[in-house]
Every structure is written in C-alpha cells, then in structure tokens.
Length: 119
Image (cartoon, helix red, strand yellow):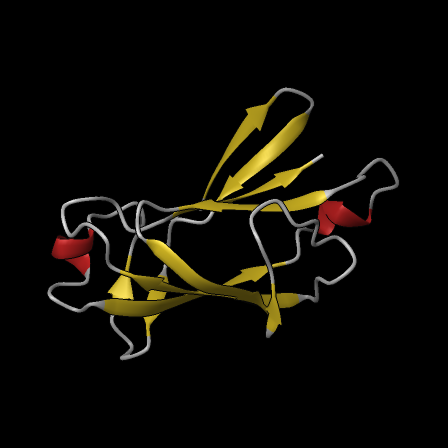
C-alpha cells in the first residue's frame, strides 16, 4: 500500500494484495492479460484497515476513488454498493473489504487503480 500527500489531504493507494474469486493474488497496477489471462471477467477483492487517524476531529471526508479502462460492473465495500467518489467515513469498520467486478474491454490495458483520499 502506498501513500502520497495531495494538497490538503492524504492519499492511500490500494495496490496489493488483491485476490480474485479463485484465490489468485494480483498486485495493482497490472495489465489485464498479464495478471488475469484470457478471462472475460473477474471480481477482485482486498481488505483494508480503518486508518486510526480517521477518528481525529479534523477529518471531514474519507473518499473512495477508483478508475479502470475495463468495464466496472459492480463495486462494494463491506457488501454495500459504492461508486467512485463516495465518502466512506461513516461506513468503515476496523477491517473492511473492497470488491469490484470487472469485464474485460482491453486485455492490453491496466486492470484497475484504487485509492482513498483523506480530507
């Protein structure tokens, strides 16, 4: 997991470890054909912890961001459907699972980029 400073906020990049529905490990960013192979679709999931800093009074938003050149069929955090840009501050638990179902559009393109923005 990487992190960056962006403006007034903090960015946490969710690079790995991700797992597909068969238990295969995937580290993002990765190219679909190299990491997923010939599969037409995949569901990737990853566990992430609630950052302890989120309890600070100065934290206003904890935003989930994700993008992909592939088609995103569904994205969930702890079983609840989410979309890019959703604020997760009120829904996070001590341990959380993000899962995303994708359909291949381009096997030579990246699979997915996911990051969290603390503002």
